[in-house]
Image (cartoon, rainbow over the protein chains, first blue to last red):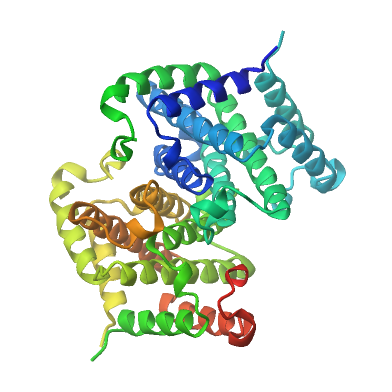
Length: 113
Length: 113
Length: 113
Length: 113
């Protein structure tokens, strides 16, 4: 069974291939595209208080959905191009974080995040 | 069956709850954390040529894996906090992109990307 | 009289030339370096409340000073490489913003920012 | 004599005060706005080769001028709000970089940048 992540990566590969866009999708360029999309996502929240950011009005929520999708799609494309198995990478990083931030020392402590 | 994305989101929820970090994880703060991690990812590629970015040495590849994981984990946490179903959002955006960038008009055309 | 901005740009040109780093300083690469530094600056504020961000402890303030300097230096280098007169560009943009955001319509209105 | 940087900062203070926007300009929010603008600047270069980035067509050059101005104006506003003397901060950082990257060890060496 192909995972949902790998299925999406295959769709993105097909999308780029059909348009002959693979020539533009070097990891360097994809990293830039990713950072451009994160900039757009950041703009949604820039003037909101933290509290307001928890209750987005409908139009902002719809905009956020699109930006989150753009970020994920460029990230998955980058991972694919660099042969990074993204789910395995997350499990490894999560284990590392568990050791780096032991519960008893980090409880409620923003400095350690 | 719970999807791999939702499983990871549940692990991240548990990780934050155990450390009482939920108080710091407003969508606004998570957007900033996401953009900080993307900055670290960008630094990996900044002085490389596009060609060099396609063939990362082992140490850089390992570093990239960690940064990709950090970006995905903050993105999933943000989506979760904002009740965005990230895989559905991607399928919607992909359909929209298919209409926005028709194959016959966009073939090999970077301007349209 | 040479302006303080142009003097700093000359220092940065000399710094790069002495190290033969000009070969790495294409506008594309400098844009990436700029965005990496802004990521580091963002990290300083990510877990702070807006109120806390107004009263940084000494160590964070010193860190911020360095990141602000890094951002400005890459920005000036980029402007220089692209023949952009940065002070003129600011005056033009400021005039444009004055028309785009008329005082009577934008008073106290975050949506318009 | 007031420096050109300080003059621009005073114009920006006036611009915000006239619109009652000071309430939105916490350092945290300004850092986000800065990172949003850098995202827009990055998008200009994302699909260009390093060589193409050295010779921008007129429309892209005009766009770049605006984005560079936006980045500088948010950066100056942030520095002002945090009582950072930005030109002094640059001279300090430049001295530090001169020691960190000695010419004889760093000549032509991208790894050290």
